[in-house]
Length: 422
Image (tube, rainbow, N blue to C red; front, top):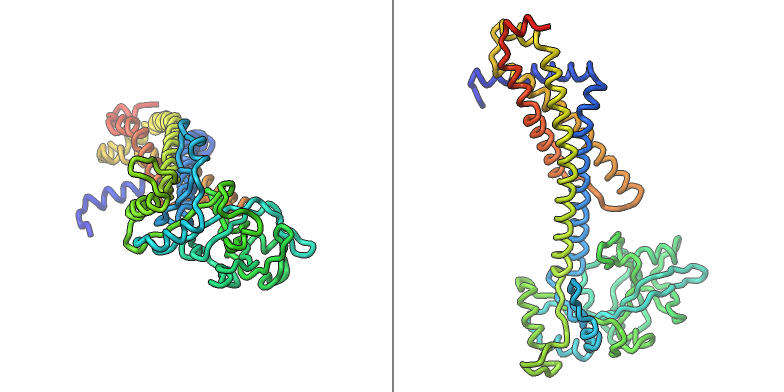
């Protein structure tokens, strides 16, 4: 603990200055409001944008991690961005097949789980008079549960026999279950998919919205062998992929290198031949979006700083007015022995409090908006502790910067001249 008497003197001066400043602000409410408006708008712009960016990044991270941050995906389409995307070349590549899945499962040594996924077109699922429209479907091999992170709200996953023989069983998403079975337990009920009966054996737990559209809430999943009733599963007309999860302690880059070598052997590609498959990773999705978030965040800072700059001039102006109004008071204080730094601290504290009031209103506005968005729209928007600290730090900094010159000029006043001032 600090036992220096000067420390307590300065601390007491700060407390007294804060009380005096607060009284002055309350007695001039309109002036205080107008002075802090620029700071309020600036802090609101900066923290609102930072909160949106942080929320989007968090949601993106959760969406990507649900795909699997240690998962490599074999497809014919690479996850690339830009104007030079060679879609005509990628379109003619062969799709991953069940036979390639079996060979990869035999030859890969760094994989923990492997699954073939085939996208099914949007469907309407029915149970008696109820229906769930515009659902997305996926046909998966048995290893899906080892690759994709998910939880079941009720029921179970496919048995090995159900996957092997292709029984007409289905796991449905939370929203599908809510539409088809609003007051019933869906387990062991038969629903209709493309006019064929499927027995519900499981329901996915609620996941919420996903930035990359991979939520299970509106998804139904069937065994890949069963999908042969709907599509030609080895056809190049379907959208299929093989997802491979790395063993614990194995990086996705190491797994990618092994997959590349094994796939070239499976497809009998010569060393000089270009590979006719893509190996995608979740990092390919997150990097471009993080760059976009960085640009948006910078834009928010620029807009906010312009508003804060205007607010800072307003604070400086009101502090000069305050110094002029209290010139005689300053002279009396100095005549009674007040040191220059006491006067400096008094007006600096007043400027900081002005900015903190504006910043607090801005932060409160952001919090109320995030709360309303979360409550009414169901979006995961939040105000983090880090952004609150940023808002407070910026407010204090602007208070010190904009209030220093008026406070310094007050501290340098001659006590005799100050007392004579009218």
